[in-house]
Image 1: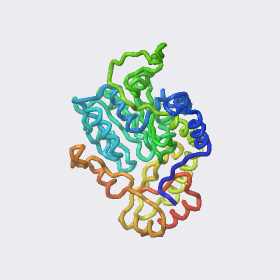
Image 2: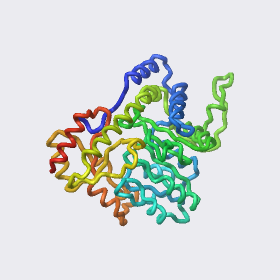
Image 3: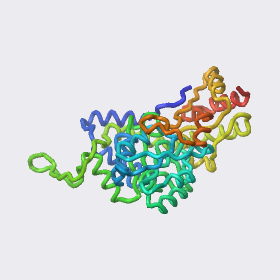
Image 4: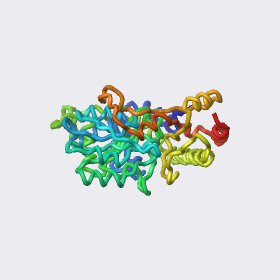
Length: 364
């Protein structure tokens, strides 16, 4: 039993071999097909890029966030969220989280807003959507834009609407162990088509390929008016993604089945606090997070039983690159001290789930 798995479908393997045999592995038709497949999930104007970090950075650039600006982010995330803000030249400002969800606290966000605040980046921790209505209200009141970090949340929904269709920008990750892998990759989704046009331009050196036809000399004819990046996805990655995306409904259904089994089986167990999950059918369950007492004892017990568990990430505000922030984050402190995650991927069987629940119910 592994904590994570790398899900590569038979169709993805065939797609990759066909791509290799075609001799065309850079950005081409398969990238367009992958973007169309993402759009069919209800995501807004998807633009495929080469990583989730690139997706965050290029969205910040498209919105004009830069030097002198502050961007509010949760501490409970991977360093990529903060790094993207630094890459844009802006300053990450940390907000506390709700330890009952692992998600950014809207009340804390409201307290962190200043005259320099340009954006807020909520992270849908473990695949459970943040309180987007409250965050949207704060953003509207303060003239901010929202960029959702949905690295954990492909397939999640908020009040019936797909994550990726709610805010001005949403960044997804297709890294190796995510719901749908392209080997590595990401996408920016935009509710405004003009934003997606700009992101599409920025992802390839500031050149709009759709409006730069080759001349008789063979070279594309274009002008470059802004700094762009080499962030495009290639057909090799998109071929894998297209095959794996077909498995997403089955993968999500199984993750939700395992997640619901954990919630039912671990409810009321001494020393375990389950996180909020109002609607398991809208949770993407990239992780199954919970809080435990005596975490080190719990980890030792589970590992002795051959059951992998992991903290995954702790608060990033302490890292020197972000200023070594040591502020008072009570929700983050609780999470850092007690958070643990159980395996919840499609390779976990009902029998595995039952054994995990039984072992935890016996105590540690």
